[in-house]
Image (cartoon, rainbow, N blue to C red; front, side, top):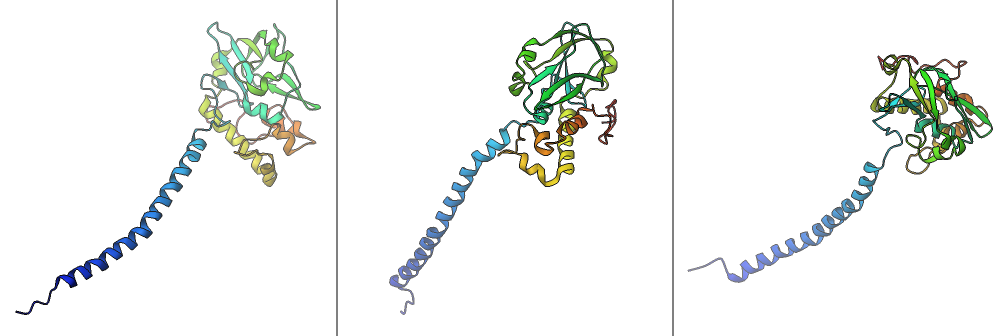
Length: 246
C-alpha cells in the first residue's frame, strides 16, 4: 500500500516550523527586553517629578490673605502674621524688614510692614485687624531666616485680633490660596510673555527675585501689584476685600 507520509517529510516540516519560531523569538524577545528596560529607566524619573514638592503647596494650618500674607491662629487667642513663599520669591532676598511695634494697630487689607530688597522698599498688608502684641526679633535682626522658612520661624509679628470673625471671611484656606498663587503666576505669564521663560531654573522652580528678573527698573511696582499695596494699579484678579465668591 502506498503511504504518502514519511517520517522524513514530517521532520522536515517540523524543522521549518522550528526555524520560524526561533527567528520570531530572536526578534521579539530583544524587543520586549528593550521596552521593559525603557519603562524601568523612566519610572524613577516620573516618580521623582510626581513626589517633588511644589512651591505652590501651602501649609494647611494657615489662612491666607489675597495680598500674600498669612495668619496663624494660636491657642492663646493671638494671631501670628507672616508672608507666603510667593511673596518671598517675588521680591528676592530681603535685606531689612520694618514691622509695627507692640501696641500699634493693624488693619486687614492695609499696609502693615515694609521690606527692603535690593535698593527698593515694598509694603505688604495685614491679614487681620487688631493690636500688635509681639514682634519676631530674630527675623528683624536676621532677615535671611526668610530665605528658607517663611511659615514657621519666619513669622513677623503677633496680633490680638479685634474683629476675627469678620476677618476670617476674607481669608483663604490653603487649597484656594494655592489656586490664587497659580493665578498670580498666570498673570505674570500674560504680562511678560516669553521673558518669563528666562527666570525659571531647571525643574520649573522660579528664580529668586522674580519681579526683579522680569522688570529690573520697576520691580517694586510689579510686586506691589500682587501685594495689593499699589493704589495706582487697578487689580483685575477679583475683589480684594472679599473672597466669598472666589
